[in-house]
Structures are given as C-alpha cells and as structure tokens.
Amino acid sequence: MKALQVAIDGPASAGKSTVAKRVAKRFGYVYCDTGAMYRAVTWAALDRGVAIDDTQAVADLAHQIEIDFKPGDPEQRVFVDGTEVTTAIRQNEINANVSAVAAIPAVREEMTAQQRQIAARGGIVMDGRDIGTTVLPTAQVKVFLVASAAERARRRFEENKRKGIATTTLEELQAAIERRDKLDSEREVSPLTQAPDATRLDSTHLTIDQVVDEISGLIKKSASN
Image 1 (cartoon, rainbow, N blue to C red):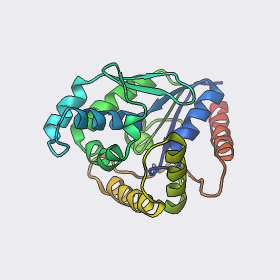
Image 2: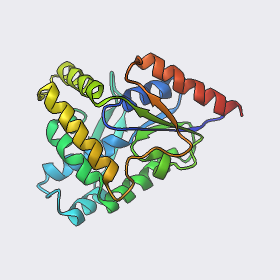
Image 3: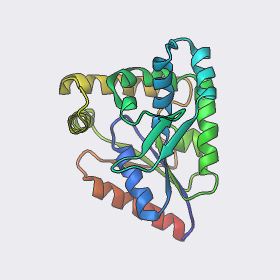
Image 4: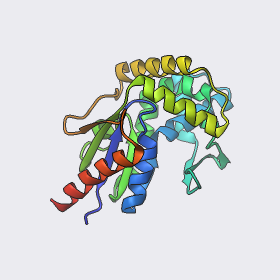
C-alpha cells in the first residue's frame, strides 16, 4: 500500500487530534500535531514575557525555539527547548491567545516550512486548520472534520476534567469555541476553510471509532488507485 499524506482539518475541539493519532497508528504512519506547534510558540511567548501583539517579537521567537515531539502514553509529549510543555500548552491562557499567534504570517511561514519537511516522505497524518489548503495542498487524502459547537464544548469540558485542568463552565467553553471559530475563519492568513477536494465529515453523532473507520476507508481507497 502506498504511503500517503493525510490532511485532517476542522474547527477547535472537533476531535481532529484524537482521530489523527488513531488513524496514524492504524496505518503505521507518523502523526504531526500542528496545533501543538502553534500552542508551543504561544506558551514560549507568554513564558518569556513576549507580548502577543508584538508580532515581530513573536515571529522571531518562533524561528529561535526548538519544538520537539516524543512518544508518550497516553499522549504524545511536546517539548520547547528541552522543557516538556505537554500539559502547559492546553491551559486556558494558551487557548485564549493561540489564534492570535497562529494568525501572524511569519509564524505560519516558519511552522509551515517545518511541517512540510516532516511530511515530505509520505506516510504522515497531519491535523490542523489549513493543512489541506496551505500546508499540504497535494495531500492524497483530505478530511474536513466538524461537529456542533455544543458538542465540541461538551467534549472539551470532559477532557479538561479527566486531565485535571482548571476549567470554566460548559456555557463559557461553548462561547469561547464560537469565538475561536470566528477568529480562525476570518483571519487573513490561511483561514479555516474546507479544501475543495476534501471530504466533509460531521462527527457530532459519531463515536471516535466510527470516524476513524470512515477516514481509514478513504485512505484505503486512495492507496489502491
């Protein structure tokens, strides 16, 4: 079976990362968490006192830091310059600022270059918001994964509880997700949008296994052509 590039895009908390990890494991592919890369830059900026609205300083920082991924159980571990930030990059302060960081053109340029290097040999599953449109426009399999804002808020709320992350109310989470959708969809650089050749998959009423099976079917079909 050919080693393909698989791009999974969609709004916040649609289940992209969870699904992408399972799909990658099923096919023996590499998983690249692009969202974690932008979160890592955001964490580094906040940790080092770099103002998020100082776009040049944030862009310079993105070029300077080293982002690394290592296998972990149950989730992949993320490091910035050797410091583990796996949990830190999921905190509410990061959630509130990552869209602004991801909208900085120079930051996106740097992250995109790194992501393309990772994907060059194929056998890769990459998730984010502009993978199929900008990062890997020639990916053989493209999926645009969506779910209702209410369902996405419920999932994030339950995930935060499991991880012991201090969280807001369900209503506040939904409002934050809706704001994030608006920011991601309206930003000037690489906005959240479905690629013309992507398969739209609504996960609102599907289990994770069902979503993985759907995407796996698309991969098998593409690999056999």
